[in-house]
Image 1 (cartoon, one colour):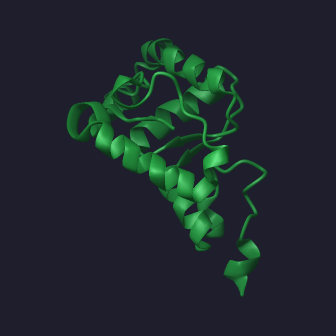
Image 2 (cartoon, helix red, strand yellow):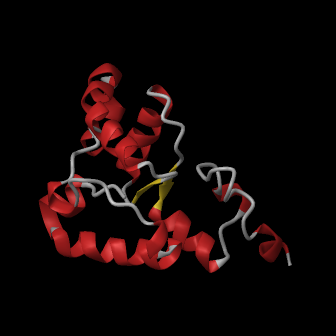
Length: 141
């Protein structure tokens, strides 16, 4: 799971990082959670710059800096990267495509909605093939 700079390092610290891990583990199962190293307040920035770099067009610089995060994600061997921040989501999704990581990047709220059974068909763009149809039969009823 990505620990966003603004939320974890610059504001609420490890307490909020621990709370997010509790939520994710509750949703996906503790046995399916793989943490990055380092993590929480010591985690690496994704390189998205709080949305600044995506908005200003410095794609080469953003991707070069983000390679650190990409390598960190790949080292986990995880099938997904979960992000609570939309800027991190955008950056890490781009890194996965650019460096051909082939891992889906999913917002934490997407997993919560999926686990509760109310994730709509139009909200599944970033889910992998293993989850993209999960629970749709329940929604249609």
